[in-house]
Image (cartoon, rainbow, N blue to C red; front, side):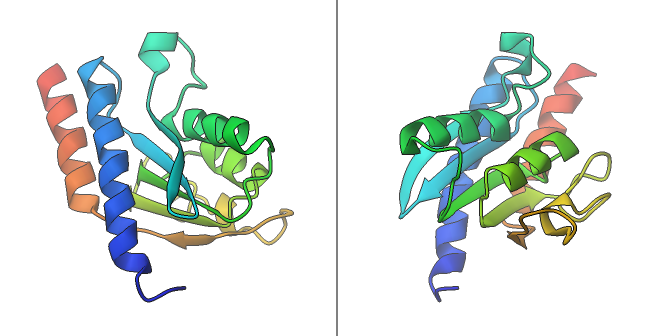
Length: 154
């Protein structure tokens, strides 16, 4: 890993937080994701489950779809996925299937986290791909955004 990876991680996580804020603006749970290849964002999305009325429209899934379209391949080799909340089992499975080599996430998810909290799909050696995972990048900002969203709904 390059010495400049950690400041870079914060930079891209801030972009993911912006996507999460946009999701909250249209009534979706504020989770954002960004896929990066060679310091270029090739996929970015916030949750759109409410807008699309789809259980599959998680931020990670949408950003991965954009990145695959941009790369012209389902194999997202040499990319990094930044997401504000630890991926759920569905998204973690998609990350593995897309062969993404590195995941950076903000807050852990005690209810559905599949990158180490409840499950560890991303580093399960029984699967055909494992990836590096870095947790906790700008976690406080991610948690604060989620809290504000859910408090406003109570």
